[in-house]
Picture (spheres, helix red, strand yellow):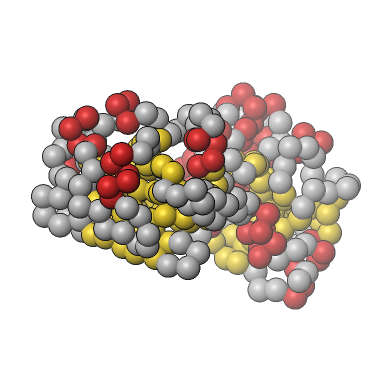
Length: 312
């Protein structure tokens, strides 16, 4: 969709925006440079406010136009989006039909926004978005929609990596999966009262040599800032199957888990869930599975959850 086909987005400018713009403008040596800095600051602040509405993080302090030396030296109106890149927010005055890009903003930008000013600078319109330009002049009528902007600045979806338990058998461990003694008080590690999903023999689990690792999991602010760990134990169940035990245990000096903490295991053909009761010092699920099969572990509390994916 081009600029002429879409409705422009209007952003009000408040006292804080004009205060910052005035402060930056007074540092400049000429009236022309002062006006340039004033407009650049308002344009950047307007886009910052728009992205804030969309719950997209920005960092004004890292932008060149927020640096007194760089804004004095260059004609920049950049806005840093952490871990994504930098947007250039160029002001457009009444009657202008093109967007002029200074040489200093032609590189290291993920895109360009045209920010339209009217005769009264109490609000602006975001006219549209352009990706990396091939020339220093952009036609406003050919700008893309703000949907294209959102696509450009949205982080790429993170691919979930599988924890390969066969690597554990060969002694290969990810640095986040630690020996139990590195995270837990030893007395909490005793097996007790298995709830099985399918298969699994408690007696065999106690006799066979087990491979065990633990990982600290972050579930936001648990009760009293309590921390918990996910413990995975692996052993040979039969010649064809592996036994797996999943536990969630408290860390530090805490003696019990928060009431309502949930552990869920999802197999390819089955699933089970257990919920911590008052004073439970661990929750756990046990099952057996064939090598090459995948399973998912979910630990949740209130509105927070952590998911880990494994392959046997």
